Image 1 (tube, rainbow, N blue to C red):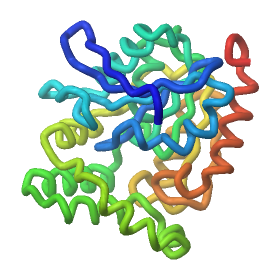
Image 2 (image 1 turned 30 degrees about the vertical axis):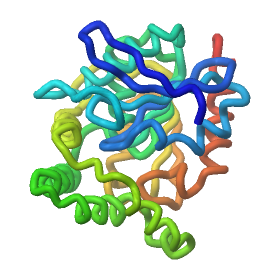
Image 3 (image 1 turned 180 degrees about the vertical axis):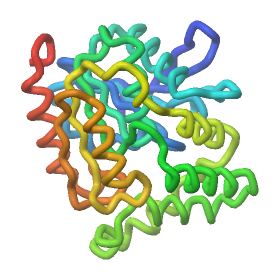
Length: 267
């Protein structure tokens, strides 16, 4: 993907990013351990009508290490500073998993910068299952168990149906670099601290897309998030944890229709 670069934030941190396309801005926020390439299928489809910004959160890819402790609010501040420096606010923010939680923090902290949210496979607060899973992944990372961590991520992130239909996805997934390390562990700890339920509701128009077969974020958690955001649109697809990997065309259509209906510069 062209347009790779990096920028230094006010505190000296380096954030790596990709900027492609032209038109109203879409800012893509990646999940736990993921780098900016997570969104390549969406960016390739949407850059014909939008300026698409994707980047590595601190602790992922080639961006700087996160602070210790790390919060999703701090990662949202990074996203905000990057987008403002590039002249891309206000924007529609698209987040997946942890990235969706970061997008929520951004919309709550700087509502004037977020004209809409598209939230894939994310949550309002971590339930018991997610807490146990994040602690399990953290333990694998701390033990230096890179292969086992990748295998566990594979099993929880891709649905059995998708793996049956796409056997080559196993080799492709396991060939990726392991996200294990302190950055991954600090991001996981930050996920545990995310909880929007006691706070003022998000005011931005919101599209929520979840997977009925998501083994990371339950349907109940997705529905809880939708109930917490007034007017949120909820679509549940027959997918695992990354809906746009398994149902790309459907995800693109939902995103295009949602963005087209927004008022203001995104209309």
